[in-house]
Image 1: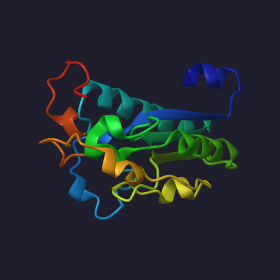
Image 2 (image 1 turned 90 degrees about the horizontal axis):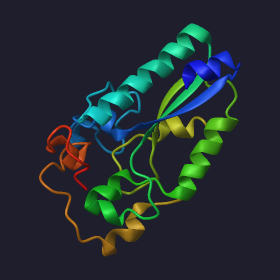
Image 3 (image 1 turned 180 degrees about the vertical axis):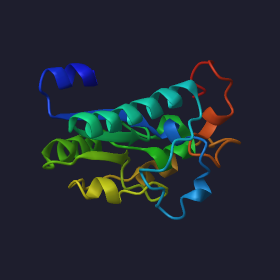
Image 4 (image 1 turned 45 degrees about the vertical axis):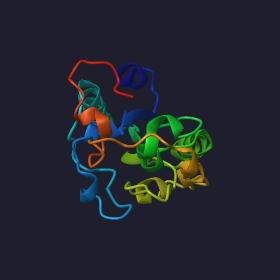
Length: 176
């Protein structure tokens, strides 16, 4: 996709990455709301490895061809965080906030290469929003509004960014 965009003269790409590119980072590495978006990859699955690879390709296309590339490490984007249990209170990106985030990515002049988190301003988030806010993103949603409806626990892998994915057998279906 990046090569086709370059060949067509497209000057900006927005790539969807994932929290799974850094899934083996411990939540307590973040401090409070501060896991930087440019944290080095520590993938938790083959899927996470593929996302770490696209992040690197985005960097290459910026450095080699001058393309503006914004990589968004998406936490989880669903209508509600209910499916994800308590982990969703950390990772959720509301659909409305996703639209605001991608609008900011498209509108910001000459971003260069940026790696940002795609999450809402959740009370329990561990991800820095500073990098996305520097592009003009303003989250208006918070997963905490759903907290009283969540009954599914996070599970034993809850101390990792990747949640249950860090303990799922490689190559097995999604553990959710």
